[in-house]
Image 1 (cartoon, one colour):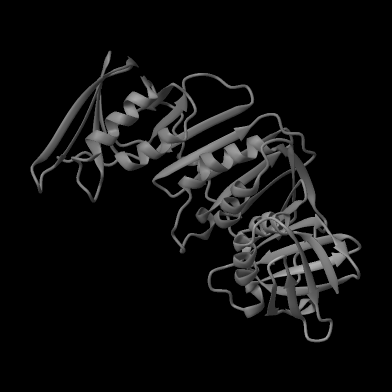
Image 2 (tube, one colour; image 1 turned 180 degrees about the vertical axis):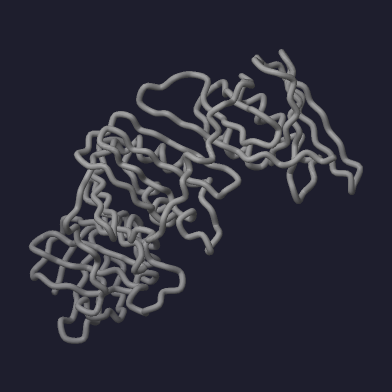
Length: 371
């Protein structure tokens, strides 16, 4: 089997797929790319058995076939070559591989492509089309709020709820929660599933700037299709917590503040906070928001005052500054509203301006005030 292509075109496709190769694969062949030639189309796949990425490229080939090629050495070779035509010859008996460039020949040992694990195919799937920009936005807004707790696998991924014309994405680690709602979807189904964090991180890196992504799903897997790329991931088989139960509905105290001023103030004040709790205190009065922190162990203390619009009673509440800064970083708005009820109940952060297409809500649990 012999085929020719451009070294830079091949490298570009390999870099898309390479993210699916795990760092400590359970099988040696999982360190390889699977090359499958059908006519003049080369399909490249990689998997860690949980997440798989498949892409394709046009080539000049003399025969059909498949071979598994060691990923690291192939990537390093192509990165070290300037853009030029290359020819790859595969011995059909031994799976030995010879790469020929303008500079010389490079030989490496491949493996039988038939031994490569089977990648799930879309079977009995429902689907919904989502604009790539919306999907990228929802991933960016929710991923940071997922949990790293292995004992709670459901919370280690993002919960997708497809409900006809609405797609809700939720992430929480029990300290913070993000709910991102896309209101202009077009689906004929109502269902929900949990997508692992790694799959979404990889997806975020390869999503196109424009166009739609076809999201297909069944009870076991989700399939993301766009351009010549397909990302397949195994869903997390667990029950997602009832996130609506923790979102307070009665929040009579509402602060409106400039996002960047508030964020920068938190970054400065957090330097003086206790390093275990990262606690900052918000003292809120009509027209002013005082941000303060202290670390009694080192006699560190800091206070700043910001201008704000406030409708409510005088209130003092403590939050983790690190979480607040993360949430504000994910807000695409000049001003934010913070809705509060009491010092012991969660605070809600929402954009100050309305968006017909996207609703976003962030929830942060308070850190109890030091007495």
